[in-house]
Amino acid sequence: MQATTAPAIRPPLWLLAELTYRCPLHCVFCSNPVDYARHDREMDTATWKRVLAEARALGAVQLGFSGGEPLLRDDLEELVAHARQLGFYTNLITSGVGLTEKRASALKSAGLDHIQLSFQDSTRELNDFISSSRTFDLKSKVAAIIKAQGYPMVLNCVMHRFNLPHVGRIIDMAERMGADYLELANTQYYGWAWLNRTALMPTTEELRDAEAIVMSHRERLDGRMKVLWVSPDYADAKPKPCMAGWGAVFMVVAPDGTSLPCHSARMLPGIEFPNLQESSVQDAWYGSDGFNRYRGQSWMNATCGGCDERGHDFGGCRCQAFLVTGDAAATDPVCPKSEHRGRIDEVLAGAQAEREHAGRCGAPTQPLRFVPGATTLAGIVYRGDENSRALSAGSGPC
Amino acid sequence: MISPNTRPVVATMFRLQFEPAQDCWVLLYPEGMVKLNTPAAEILRLCDGQRTVDEIVAELEAAFAQTALQGDVCAFLGQARERGWLQ
Image (cartoon, rainbow over all chains, first blue to last red; front, side, top):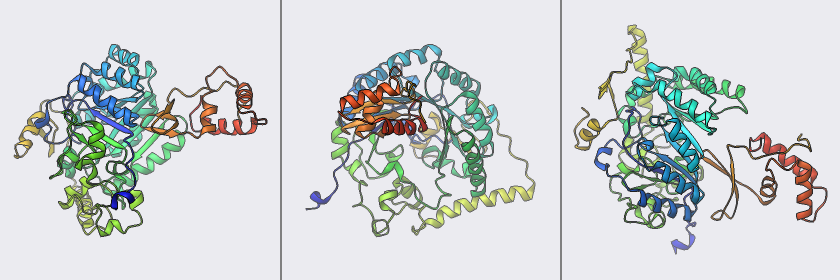
């Protein structure tokens, strides 16, 4: 009888195609799984084309090509052309490395609709330190190429304690570059960002100050550049409506074909997510245990199931629940109703105490300098093959 | 207020297309989608940068055998421009 009362499953609207985990950057907040080196087999062009066609037939319309760095796939132009012909609205999510004038133009001819370019900061020093790569100047050149070829341009900057004080300058930089959208994406603590959470964590005051600056610029830029401020995960007293609900609109396809309801669900234990090399998109979306596990409301515990907010926040984030409480079905620990909210407050208090301590001791700010080839630096673990292999083997980073 | 002689066109940031799965016309933009109701879609489909507002009104009045659509069409075009859908 339950089946007749359960609401119908709606089709996916948004597909994120992670074409490869290979990446020339080593960003400390990367959302790829820390053990990505274990999943380094990539689907071939023909299989990707089938996946795109199946997803489109179900109703998916937004398509992001992501990674890793998707430009490392030399079939990107072919995949974009195929996607555009199917009627997808296509987005290239890139670090900019490899986006030459020639390639940007070939992608334009293939029908690419827009480009999201990442920046790590408004300064070369911090950009290069956070990504452990010499990419700041190159990114600036790529931004000019994107604009010159008439693409709508989204600049994305992941925010954390190191660059939050620069937020005004980051906005100025985006404005100078002619960005149509600026996404100021506060770090979400999964994958590599979870490993580095202590180093990256801002205080609530640092977040408040930055947000006030964002709001003041937003008015000024109204109608010219849209500035999105992605709510910080921990400082907010409300759980986020993660992915607009598990298996509600969003499907991520990892480089090896594993289909996932979000970027990080792969690390949840005890769930077998369907691989699209063997499964159709339709079977994965509608029929798999992985996509049905936390879909809708029937999985919710008493706290969430009886909460008036459940139709708005969909129970928050399952990955956050798992990482902080050890139980993916627990109430999102960010929620004040969670018995584990104290653990989130401890993290925030830890950041506060660290700043106060540094202030009292008059400790000089640690110089954040890019060191070529470093795998760890200043207490930070860089995303890279060596670290990923070590973390896959269950040992610590190099 | 939008002038009757302008030739509105859907902004380059947006793409207008029919979505069979939604059974409606939609506007697609970076990381988003607006579902359009029938009147909105009928108006936007005529915003091709060639037709003037007056011509759009005349065409809709003829197509739907109605009169005095000018007010509604202009009000919608004003809102659409405010939202950045038109340039």
